[in-house]
Image (cartoon, rainbow, N blue to C red):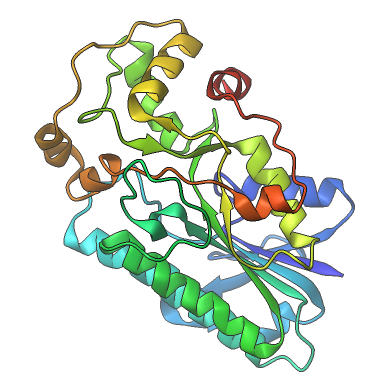
Length: 296
């Protein structure tokens, strides 16, 4: 049987598809261009185009598609794109699933720990409620669209992912050029917590969720050892063997550079992966320094 994956060419989708195929699974990826073979199928979320027949016979769907949160200045237009790409794309996918006579067993859909908002230094897990602000509101709408698959009789799981450490790209990849020339510095006070996960652990956790019927609803994909931004800065500098700046980057400078996204960089998320650890999942990387050295 088939596993359907959206966002398959992204930072997380690429290794996930490779791992699934390496394990002998047939994977069909949804693409927004002309398909190049039988393992690709066309969809166009912006125009509401998805043939339900593409999903027929699948045992699972992994939905990772969405415009990147980091790496672009948050203009009003781009914030609208962040919402549209997540909410409307998920609605289209679930709507197509609803038109099938036999549906996949599970929909695993991306989300983020931004759901919780700025939690300061409070330690929280999946039992915590939604925070306030643009990203918490976006995550709530995004997850609600995915949960609608539960009304179709499917198990649903929402991957509330933290900062993924990968040497290929993503948030860490965008930090590396600055740190490699010795200009890395804490952001704001540096006391805000960053909850992170290595790309290897993210992949292993997602595969666990796919094949574990008891894992459903929101699942935090973060290491059990969040660190402050100041600690993250020191560890990344040490992993690269480069000095870091003693003077932090002030909030107003971040706002000039990335717009409203600066608020998120200065927010704290001290998140624990309670559902994963309760399920017996064992993380490969719980030390930030070790994880950074592994991915770099």
